[in-house]
Image (cartoon, helix red, strand yellow):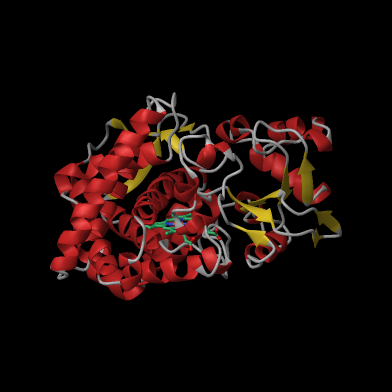
Length: 417
Ligand code: HEM
């Protein structure tokens, strides 16, 4: 527990608590506000936020209940608190529903099933050697006993290498995908997107690229990359251009912020809980359960938003039809009724995959096995090379209520002796 943050959270009247404020996330105090909501108002109504009114669901089992009930808690149209994010006048209605994360059944089902085989364990096995080789090359090129930024040099770089393999995108152009991904989730004035026109221009560029590559691979479907897998699927051929673009950008952005922040989160976790690093060194067979624990503890996606399709009762509270309901995975993963010492990073927990970070139900993350594989390979390759990744300054966190992540993390590597 962070006593100072807990005192701050305790001073705010319950009705005024607004856990959607990105500043609470950037300052990393939001977990104490969420702790208070779990205890005092597990289904909490915030009447005024920068994004309008919304409900927060903060306990593990209630979050699961909402996530499993897509009929009453719909994803249709948006899964973010900010309605403007998808409908700020710059994206017309058709595009608004173009990506299947914002669709309900039956449309969601067919599109998801087209993508699923490309990210299933059997196909990932074919990509593993390439991901390992690029991870090894990167780790061997890093400066030792010198300060550098882990986020840009390792977390972002490795994520881009992983996505380049997944899409079979030219290796030397991997940073192009980073730019595209930042533009897709960006908005004017964020330092990346200059204007809506700029964003639309880049979206057209992305569309042209994927459209061309998709057609080439459909004509010659020999690879194991995701685009070739999709090119073999009939569902994909029936999609409108906007739906096609939505699917490709979902895959690009879905794997980007999330995976990179779990990699940085693993370094922070080992720094804050050095005993766990010693445990891992003594028993590298713990790497897979450590990976799941990083994903629980770091929790790269803080929430998903649903919209009620009718009046629904949850924990004795009636949520009216048409309301925003925010399920805080970040809170459910710290629920003291479910996890022993929930704030601690413990790599040998009895049920390490029992966490909410990938969501539940019909929208459960399709890239979960890929993300776990990348993180597992990273640590399997770190252990024989380095004794410690020392954090030599405070990491800076991003200003986002949705992605829990880092801008910078200064580190110094110490070689294994
Ligand atoms: C959906 C988290 C990595 C692709 C989701 C959801 C979460 C999530 C919370 C929504 C679940 C729901 O609404 O119930 C994460 C985390 C990751 C990660 C924490 C890394 C640690 C990836 C990667 C990819 C990916 C690497 C692909 C390259 C997707 C897709 C969906 C999704 C396509 C939409 C599924 C659907 O709507 O049916 N992810 N993700 N994710 N994720 Fe991930």
